[in-house]
Structures are given as structure tokens and as C-alpha cells.
Image (cartoon, rainbow, N blue to C red; front, side, top):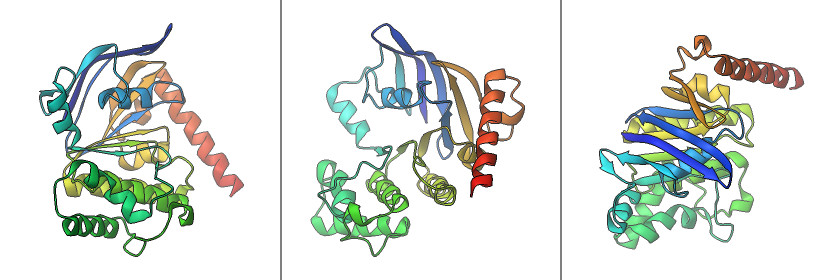
Amino acid sequence: MIEIQNISKSFGDKQVLRSISGVFEKGRTNLIIGASGTGKSVLLKCIVELIKPDEGLVFFDNRNFTESNRHEKIEIRREIGMLFQGGALFDSKNVEENVRFPLDMLAVMPRDEKQDRVNLVLNRVGLQNANKKMPSELSGGMRKRVGIARAIVNSPKYLFCDEPNSGLDPQTSILIDELIQALTADYDTTTIVVTHDMNSVMGIGDNIMFLYQGDKLWEGSKDNITHSGVKEVDDFVFANKVMMAMRKENT
């Protein structure tokens, strides 16, 4: 479980997040949604301190991450896996080298054990024959799956996914969503997904936090988002439905 309390962040005179609080539950896919520019990715980066929030606290299973010392933060970061937008693979490394990178940086284990672990997670994401391929040889969906394999190679307790479906076709997006959902259940992780894709919301949205212009306006599940009673949420859902309908007409 991850809990955030009153997270605020400004860049210059622009306030991006205003006192955001919430709980992200273990073993469920927790989504942070909203239109572009609402602070979704900034909030995710504040949670892991890729960006330091101006105010607020973050707790990983009741451990105060914000006020931890350097050693304590390193120990918590060892339990975190991250899928960055676009995959963020190293172009000069092949698939298995990219996936092994967190183990080389953080894990103390023999090289053959690292290789076994790499092979295991590549098999889990359906890339068992791709070890020696370079990123330039991969499709967008394959790059995302390599990114997921790298994110889970250290068996994380906490999994963060920033716009995992960006740039993907609808069918591949569904496959990535289903993979993230399955891995969340299999590894019993606390998973947080940043997205603006309503297909993802309706497919895997166990718990959903809706941000609007830096504020949390609504929280619930995919079962009740279509009758939230919040105008901004209704507008977001309607706009996405129109966009999905237009995409279908153009295919």
C-alpha cells in the first residue's frame, strides 16, 4: 500500500498540484487519470521523488519515505519498478542487457542468477526469443514489454507505469493493460498507472483518482465513473468516448 498526504508542487509561479491525498491499494491497479497538463505524471514523480514535492508526505507500507534518511530511501527504491513513458530503453544495449540493468545496479547476486531472472521475466512478457535484439529492431509494443520486463525484474513491491499505452494502437494497448493487470495480481504489487486512456480506465481501473488542474476532484472505480456526478469527470469521459468513436470510424 502507498499513502500520500497533502502533496503540493509548484514550478515558479505555476502551482501544478494542490494538496493531493489518497491511498493506492496493494494487489490492485490504481489509476491516476485526467486530461493532459493536469499534473498526473508530476504526482507520480513526486511519489518516488524523481521530483521533490514542496509539501506533503509519502508512505510505503507505513514507512515515511519523505522523511527517511538516504539509506532508508535506497532500501525502499530497491522495491520499486518503473515503466517510463516511451519505454526509455538504452539504445546501445540489447534486450537482455536493458532488462538486467536494475539487477546490475541494485542486486547482489551471481551473474547466472541474474540471467535466469532476465529469462524468466522476458518469458513472462512474451519475449522469450528476443534477448539479443536491439531496441531499434523492436516494435512499439515490444519496446513497452521490454520496459515492463525491466520494471519487474527485481520482483518489486511497487510498480509505477507512466502512460504505458502512449503511441500504441488500440489492440496493443489492450494487451499491455492486460499484462500490467496480470502482473499486479501475480506479484501482488501496489501498481500505479498514469493514463488518459478511457479504454484503460474501463479495462483495468480498480481504483481511480481523477485530477483536474492540479486538484483531486473524484476517486472511485471503473464501475461508477460513468455516473460520478462531477461535471469535469463526466466531460472527460464523454470527450474520450467521442474520440474513440472517431478513431473507429477512421479505421
